[in-house]
Length: 394
Image (cartoon, rainbow, N blue to C red):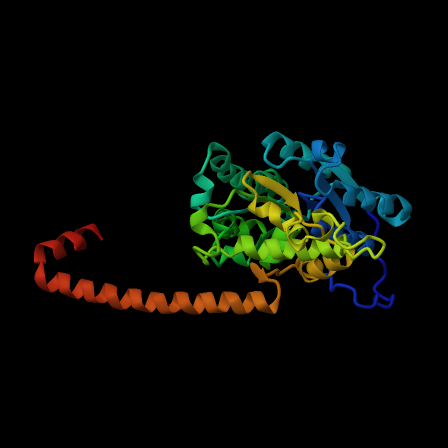
């Protein structure tokens, strides 16, 4: 069923990713096939000769919601590229539903015989301070929703794939998280906690399945990559957390600015000009008022809306390619590798940020050991009964 990989005697393509060496094409299962990272990765590995199973939510695709138009354009390219057509299978998948995960995995195995690499690419960001997420029933429900998407959806598909990989004694699970799995970020508390949860799950799972030769890798992209390439949901801001009152929760301000910049690139706004054909004093306020121009609603303004609002960042092709290039390169380099890293931080800035965090954690640990030692000494010297009690328990 599967063709052999092209001969290694052919000269390498310029600036191509360094794929891991293997004797046969890999079968990739990508959980959220419509995301920019998933589409770019699928193009890379299909061109390399690998096979791809792309999971797509049927309702989202049929109603042309979210990023489904980008995926439709990708499918058109697949139809026009003969060597890709037999290597791609699209399956209906909402990873929050266990039955759909099992059915999609079964369809992938029926089509290509196995699954070598599972890429968990589902993610969604909720922007809002922790207290802002407790304002109403709707905002409270977002906490459950973010964990359903960022944690349970990944757990469901991993559990559906594991028996296949365990029986074959081979497989590689890759989960896209972010440096927010290391760093708490004000204004993204629920997003960070969901990533800490899936990272803790994967760290534990890696030890359990290592005897079956199934590897686990966490690919930590920078915050902008994860947030801007997926759906963003913002909750109404509270006056106590506005910048003039509380400068700590910066996420809303940062992403509002980024969305406005992206919107100007995608759809440049025409600047109002003075109409010399009109007599002085006849211009309407809507034509000439600077305030009217300054307060024209932008996409960034939606993040400060008084209602819960969801959107996708307008990513022009050039910006999108540049934004995700390093992450896609990392995924192609480690996907299916015989000895993949357990954790890969994408980008030097992310590495430096995590190093600073680990340095701080090490200093805190030293302080903790020093204080704990002092408490133990005082306790043994002053309270022999308490000391005996502690020793008995421990």
